[in-house]
Length: 187
Figure 1 (cartoon, one colour):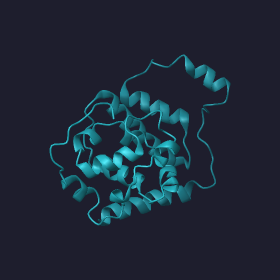
Figure 2 (cartoon, rainbow, N blue to C red):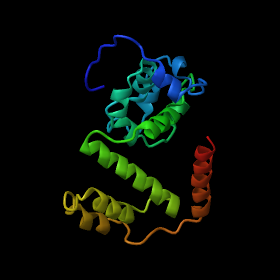
Figure 3 (cartoon, helix red, strand yellow):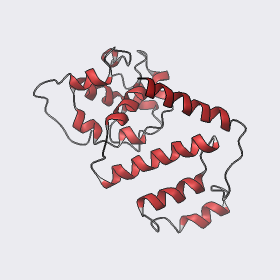
Figure 4 (cartoon, helix red, strand yellow):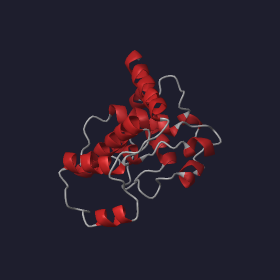
């Protein structure tokens, strides 16, 4: 956490919205830090996985929704696989993303846009199509020239392809996105 906060009272309303049935197992967290030490995005985020759960328990909604953590999470589930108590941090992050309507700062808006575009690319192509993703990101954020000098090097080294990939599992990945959308509608 970037700033220290004083807790005057614990507000349980956030926890009631995020985990009314206790399926996320947030209260079971031992604060051992195994989830955070294995997190693939720990160097890119401002709040570590073990801190997210505790902050949710304490009702620190404003701090959670203003953090980069809910948008930089790769949902790789490494945290859950390392957790001795099986705390479901990625599901917590998904729920926080769902209640975060407007990102308060320009940087967080860009992270949110990138996240949405990346998921859209995965749904459409079965994996990330970097050139298409970055083209759409640049258009949506109007940040056209910040890293333009890197583009020729990325092309030369094969890090970015001009044409979309052809993946055999594209339809299966798209079906997963459809199932998730249908479940959300059913709730």
